[in-house]
Length: 127
Image 1: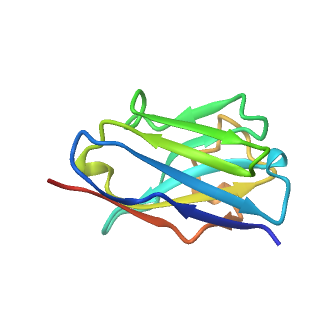
Image 2: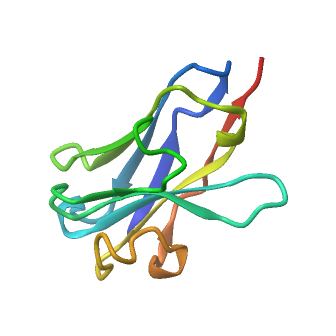
Image 3: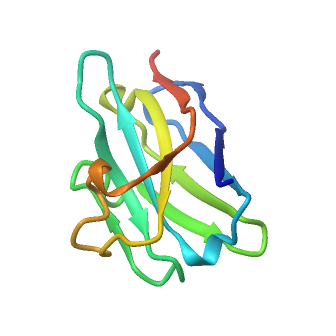
């Protein structure tokens, strides 16, 4: 049974950094595409970044390009999202998601492509 557990969220001031982790269990990570998504209050869930099963192909939402970096350690079954220069509009619940058959990069920022989701971790950006 595939399970994803996010961690690393918290309160950070604008301009600060956080690193989110997504620990994957029950499967071998290197077979799965991983996406990071976020959902702010009253907003739809949006794709932030995604990463092919090998880690060789990545995609970012325009709003986070140059500030966020996705990476994975398949040996540790963990995917990371390094978030720098955080802005108040980056706040929300961040989720990681996994699936086997997602076209990267064409469709990997669409939440509808993923069957497996973590429970989310809250990110608050405020002074």
